[in-house]
Length: 209
Image (cartoon, rainbow, N blue to C red; front, side, top):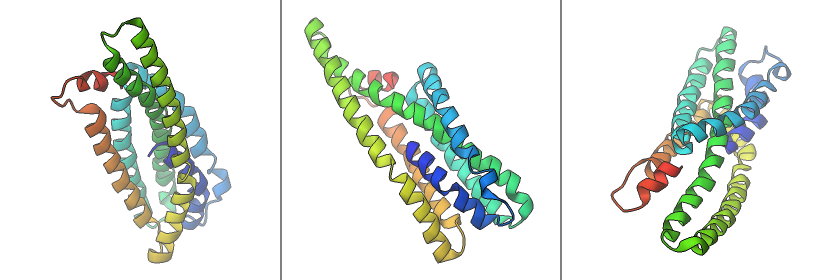
């Protein structure tokens, strides 16, 4: 949802500009999205350290969904004058994807560390050391797996644009699908990390991430 969106939008941004605004040279603006998204990633990590990765990720997916709806709206204007607003909203999506990338990668180690610490509670120093090693091992595996899955964004998003253009003559259908996906991510983030179910131990995990 975050890293996958970032690399997917980076790959497809020139195509999007070229097909939707033929009067604009995409090479003059296409670099801005990846640049701002990359610069925003450390901000996501810092915000997560202060506010919690889950909270930042939750709000971030909402921003991505709303900004993408805004992009769809600007494309519906059917006017060359809509390009500045389109560009601003697209860059907001890039920034949000960068912030979310930082917060998501902050959540993963925090979640495993909290989970294993809960299991080892009361077991002494040796148990806590073993829990720390297990958390680091699982964190490394999930970070690698997550990055590998996210890499498909560079294929999926351009292909979604092409399929949408072929089927409808525009990219609104693809962007609408992305909005639905982000709404799903909002729900999953809340359900898995932010809600406070009654079962013991989970509130501590929610606070950790």
